[in-house]
Length: 336
Image 1: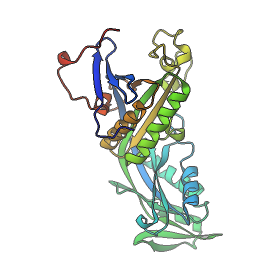
Image 2: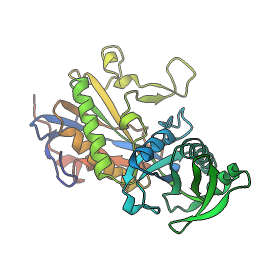
Image 3: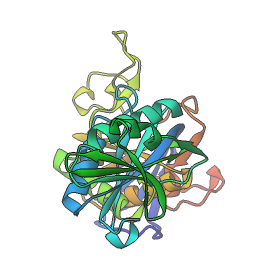
Image 4: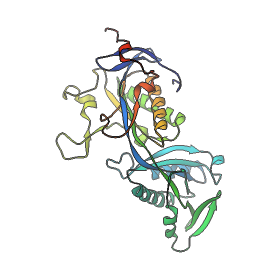
């Protein structure tokens, strides 16, 4: 895998297609679309789940972040950020950090209450602690305490104000308040590859690189990968979103707006949410570099709505180390 600071060898620039021609480590030429990912603000919170061991912290994190791929249809966007070793948690137990996003901070509070109450409190040995210092504090624990039906007590966990709620196992501890902040959602890049196997391998490499080298971000789709990219609205039906036919290889010869090259059989998308714009940009760079290094990748692109969706942009040229220059100075693509 290429390092995050390593600049790729730019072979040229195709003015007609608006693509940078990049030489991959395997010697193949990968086209990187001269475009940007367009992002939008969502409210975010972060939960530190600790448990008796890594197994139960992982189980609680998996369940708590379920049905949370996209706010298009799901009630939230959520995923695991990373594991936290026991020597870095307030109660000296292994933990998992998860992030949860919503359009509205009041609905975000509801999502935290529902997911903590139904998924963490019910899970053996777990505690739910705040993982974010935000501009706002959501009174989650102070609301969930009423489950204790008057038997709940104030408690401290590593110096943090928490509530101790009696349960059949013993006691469930939940922090009184959880931080919330306006964060960034919708970072993305798309991988075009010759075969489905190569495309999935490239996507997996990107996800692994991001999880290892890009803090403060999550990838809310299954395994960090989305195969069913959507467009706003529908060509035929009254729907919020529908399949993005331009990116479907099986429709390449049918739809006039296809962007799938003839030698591509699969397209997969990595979608990113992050606590800051810089965090998302860094994750995109890490992921793009990792995917380009996989043989069979033909093209990298990103989705946007021309600036109409949101105020944040991340340019793909920054992920491959292209320094801004006068367009007239761009190297023309060599003739085939």
